[in-house]
Amino acid sequence: MKLGVQGLNAKATLSPAVTRRLARRAEELGYSSWWAGEHVVLPSPRTPDSPMDPKDPILDPLVHLSYVAAVTEKIELGTGIVILPQRNPMVLAKQVASLDLLSGGRLLLGIGAGYLEPEMTAVGVPMSERGGRTDEYLDAMTALWTSEAPAFRGRYVAFEKIDAHPRPVRPGGPRIVVGGHSPAAFRRAVTRGHGWFGNGTHDDLVACLAGLGRAAAEVDRPARLGRLEITFMQVNPVTVDADAARRYADLGVDRLVVYPLPIEDPDDVIRFLEQHADLPR
Image (cartoon, rainbow, N blue to C red; front, top):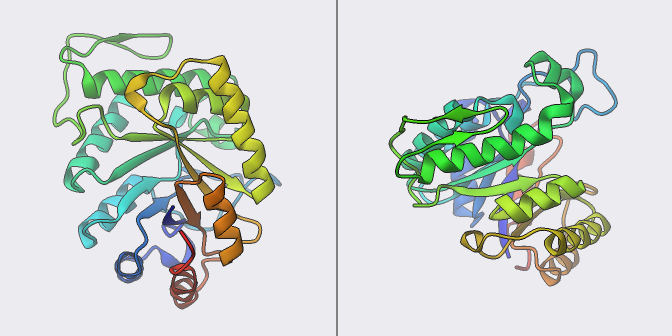
């Protein structure tokens, strides 16, 4: 089981100097992946389902990860997650390929369908379309990254007689990690993802693994995707002890991601990273 860290593109950790310090320290400590979340806008005033206060700063994940790529050498760079239906898939495909190339193929593209209605409305995406757009955008980007003569025709995206280079470092495009806890997200992970990203408690993970199993029995998984990798982040409590880490490893978790909340003091984050660096794997 590998170890990752999430959320350090926000609040007290987003300055260049702090990002350099934390990213290099995480790499020194043996963390294998660094994940950055996304919210383009947040409801103001804050709503019960919003994960952040609207005045909490959060950097765009791809811009942030470009900086982290420049100050590190080997740690994988994950979007955890990009809210895919809010993005133009052709523009995002170019940004992803560019970052993947500049980082030496280290990008993990974590995506999700989103859930905050005010955010969706602000960027012009109807909530009712978010699932369909997510699936179609993934298919369209994959066609652009992998086809010799890229073409795609769907409800939301259509193109032909175009091309885009550079392509991502991996011939099949970057590894896609699908986030979400719904039956639709589980099916999306099985049919379109190299991996799945979830969060919550140990019991939440058990339930999600069962949901992924049901999805695998309902839909076909393309052989090109290989085995579905499991990435999980414990959020209650945020501190992970050795026994919990062993339980996650026993459940088959490939990446355990820690989240150093409340992210209000960089020194506290360093201590959190050092405390968790020796978890059983």
